[in-house]
Structures are given as structure tokens and as C-alpha cells.
Length: 202
Length: 273
Image (cartoon, rainbow over the protein chains, first blue to last red):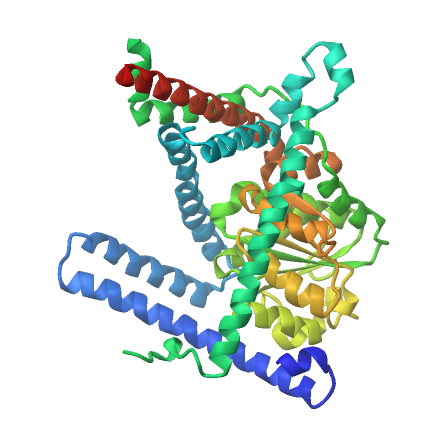
């Protein structure tokens, strides 16, 4: 794969396309393994009559119903889409929406300017939160005309600078570090130095 | 002061109630705050606007219902823009939980203005993530032999003349996760595909390095980005409607943080004294 990246000609391109097919096939088997793992976990809970037994039954019922409807009526069919739109979408969206409440509560309880670093983070967060929604500019436009003419949109401009300069620089450093780490780990795996993925050491 | 002591130990249920009210009330009684379009979103809009009719864009809808609030309006807006410009759209997804969502959104956006098969095709989900991206760089039909409905791609008019990324004018990845990095690494770097990214607000910060280095041409971030795009296509949708709630909720969190810090320092001072 590495050779093909730099030498995109036969026979490397043929090997490349074949390997990609293999990866997709192995990916499908990974789905099957995931499914069997899920079934085993919940079957064990049902067999042991644990406290979460009703939820495990719901998992099986949900899985069976969606699979049956998809296979019999087709995934493009009205039944499958109805189940998806009216059960999965509201449930998944609701679970994620709960975050908003917990974030507000966590921010109230934990966001304290105890140290210089915490204060800097707090001030930056407040500026960005204020500017990244329309209300920042909306409130500034209601300031005296002289202030607005002097600087049209300071919340937006400051927030933009924070995102495009210091935040971007830090993020770029993190990305470079992650990439270098991934290259090092990959080389170790290819050369056989790192064998933990094969269960070595157990 | 007693009130500061009480604020320091405020029951979280009052905070939950305040958040709920700040979200619900502006939805019922809209304020209509003006939305300013940022350069990152304008660039994506301008690029699609300049594409001649008959061009093709690929839309990777890599999200699930959890990110619906931010990415669905963005998805609708981009699709409606493309359909209105007679630009063909190839939709697909790398997220299995978003497979049905992609089909729904492409159909909803197409109502009255585009026809499935002729103006757009939805390929659905194939497992493999990076291998799917790389495989489409060689031959899309090798990765997706049929569309989502099971029709061979050779029989889909929208796929006529489309073999790989060389035939696609723009790829937009609407992502709830880290898939843009794979698209940029494989489709962008290896195959030279022009890429734009739409993502959740919390992820948007992470893509500014790619925007700065021109590895992506534009960035639509969060519900605000979606609202900006709705403003550009002059079609108010759920993102615009949600901006009032989001604004008031942000102000509430800022006020809560300030109040919490005031009460914290007041209580700490009293304890020290």
C-alpha cells in the first residue's frame, strides 16, 4: 500500500485494488463478530436473570424486528423507514440532547477561575461562546454608534482570531504529534516490534 | 451573604429548568436575530454557485441521528442548493447508523425539484471507511456496485460518465466524527479531490488547520453554519429557527459561570476570614 502511494502503476495498482476488496470483506466479518459479541453479552444477562434483564430483552426484540422488517420489506421500504424515523431517530437525538443540560450543570459546578490557566480558559470560553452565536453581534449593534463605527464586530473578530491563531496552532501541534505517533506505532507493528495486537505477552 | 451561599449549592434541577426554558421559549416566541455569513461558509456556497449546470458533487453524510440537529439542516441546505443549480449529487455514508438518514434527507430535499436516478443517486453504506474512500478513488462502482435501492450503477443516469474522483467537482463531508481527516488524507492528498467539510460546532475547531493550509476549501460549523447556509440560499429552516434558542442558552451558561465564580470566591473569602 505504501509503495502504491508513490508508484501508482501496475502491478502495484492491481494489488492495491485487490487489497481494498479484502479490507472491505474483513470489515463485514468484523460486523458479524460485533453482533455475536452483543448477542452473547445480553444472552448471558438474560440467562443469569440480572437486574438489567428487561433491557437485554428489548435489545433482542429491537434487533429482531429491525432485521426482519429490513429483510422482508426492504431497507428502502416504508415500514423500515417508519421504525427508523419514529423510534431510532427520536431516541438517539434525545440521548445526545441530554448533554446540553449536563454541560450547563457541569459548567456551573466545575468551571472555577482557581488558577491563571483556568482563568484564561474561562475568559476564552466566554468570548467564543458569546461570539459564535448571533446574539454577540446583535447586542454589540445596540451599543452607541461611535463604538459600532470604531469596531463593527469585536466579539466576532476576537473569536475568529482565537480560533484561527492560538487554537489552530495548538490543534496543529496535536495533529502533528498524533500523526508522528501513529507512524511510529505502525512501523513497530510492521517490523514486528509491537505485538500486543496479537495478544503477545498474555 | 445568604443568597451567595445558596447559589454556591444550587440544585442542578433549577439549572435544567432554566436550560429547558431558554430553549423552548425562543422557539415559541422567535426573536429573529440577524445572521452574518462567515467567510468559511461563503466559500463553500460560492464554489457550488460557480459550478456549471451538469457538474457533479459527492456528499458524504457521515453522521447519525445524534448529530441531527446540527447536520440535517446543513445537509438539506446544501442539497437544495445543488438541486436548484442542476448539479448532480452522489450521496453516500461511512456511518452505518446514518444510512437510512442519508436516503431520507436526499428525498426530502429533492421534493419538487429533483428526480432520483436522474439528478441524484444515493449509494448508501459500505463497511471499510478508509478503504471505501481509497476504493472510490479508483472506481466508485467497484465499491458500490449498486445504489441504495439495489439498482446497478451502470443503469443510473446520474452516474453516467462518473468513474472516480476525477469526475467529481467537489466532495462535501458532513461529519459528526473524525471522518473528514480520512477524506482529506486519502481523497484529498492522494487523489487531489477538492473537499469542503460540514461538522458539529464542537468539531469545527479541529478543522481550522486544514482550512488554513487549503486542504479544505470551506468549513460549515454547527447549527450556526447551517443557518448561514440557509441565509445564503434564502430558505429559512430549522437551523435559523434554532439560532435564537442557541443564543439565549449560551448567554445563560455564561451568566451561570459568572454567578458560580462570584459565589465561589465570596464563600471562599468568608471561610478564609
